[in-house]
Image 1 (cartoon, rainbow, N blue to C red):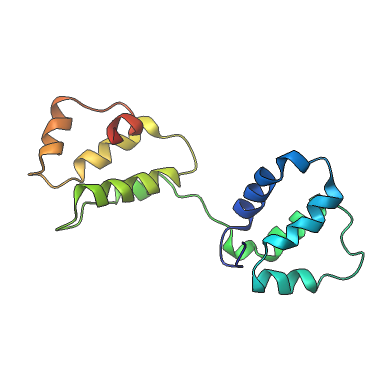
Image 2 (cartoon, rainbow, N blue to C red):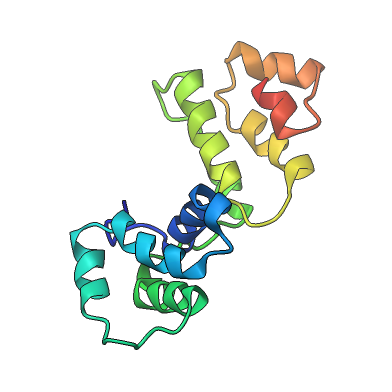
Length: 144
């Protein structure tokens, strides 16, 4: 359900994925689209004028432009460089935050993203010492 406060592009992408089997039937796609809208988005949908939308493509474009303020802006690599392990934070929590941030980065910086993780671990952490001796070459390898 789209609540009006999340990324509209992501919502349309998920909707398209769920409707893959019906993707050629654009009229059905338009009719079913409203069934995935919460209260705020449904008010917007109900406010569309009769015959104001001519295609599913136009419906999704109008939807995205109306809810553009919630469009997710990709993060840059600097986001990882400034992330540090907090005092008292567990390795699991730090790893989860790091992995989430890495997945929000716009481009593939896999080769450069492992170093800040290691450097920003607390100095006495055993994993930091282990990664110094046997460095990870990718974020996937690091998380494994």
